[in-house]
Amino acid sequence: MYLIRAYQETDLSSLELIYHDAVMGQGRRGYSDEQVSAWASFPYLYADEFRTLVGSGYTRIMALQHIPVAFATLYPDNHLALLYVLAEHAGRGLAGRLCGDIEQEAARRGVRCLRTDASVLSRPVFEQRGFRLVSQQEVERSGQSFTRFVMEKPLAPPSS
Image 1 (cartoon, rainbow, N blue to C red):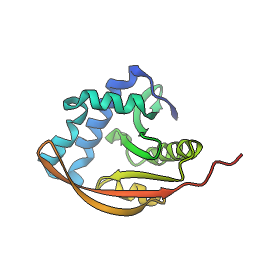
Image 2 (cartoon, one colour; image 1 turned 180 degrees about the vertical axis):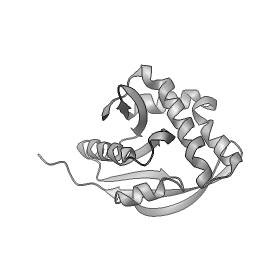
Image 3 (cartoon, one colour; image 1 turned 135 degrees about the vertical axis):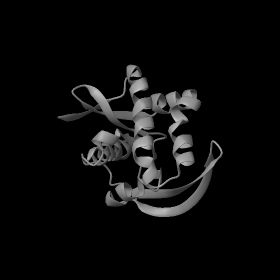
Image 4 (cartoon, helix red, strand yellow; image 1 turned 90 degrees about the vertical axis):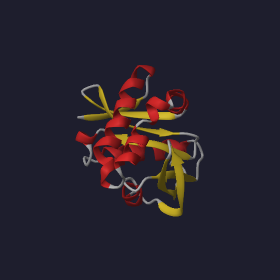
C-alpha cells in the first residue's frame, strides 16, 4: 500500500533518483533526447538548489513499503514546484494523491490560488485536477529550450 509521509533529509538521494528516473523514463514522450538529458541532470548539476528546494519547501513522499517512489514539493506556499513519480509506478494515481495533499496544505496556509509550471507531460495531470492554463513560456535549461505551461487552481478555504 502506498502511504504519504513527510520528507526527511535521509530521503534526498531517493528524490534525486525519482526525479532522474521519471524524466528519463517518461520524458521522451514529449521531448528530444537532448532535452531529456538536460532536464534529468537538474538534481545533480544543481545539487544545492535541488537540496534547498526540497528541504525548504513542504515536501511529501509517497512510499511503498517505506521506500520513496514519488514526491511533491510546495515552495513557496503558493507554488507546486516539483511533482515526480518513478516510471514503474506511473499511472497509478500517485501524482494525483500527492497533488491533493499539496493543495490541502496550501489552503491550510491561506493560499487561495495555487500555481505550477507544468511540462508537456504533466499538463494533463494538472488539468484533470482543475488547474487552468495561464500562459505558455519558453525557458532555457542547460542549453536546451523547453515549453512550460504556467497553470493555476483556485483553492477553497479549509473547512473548520
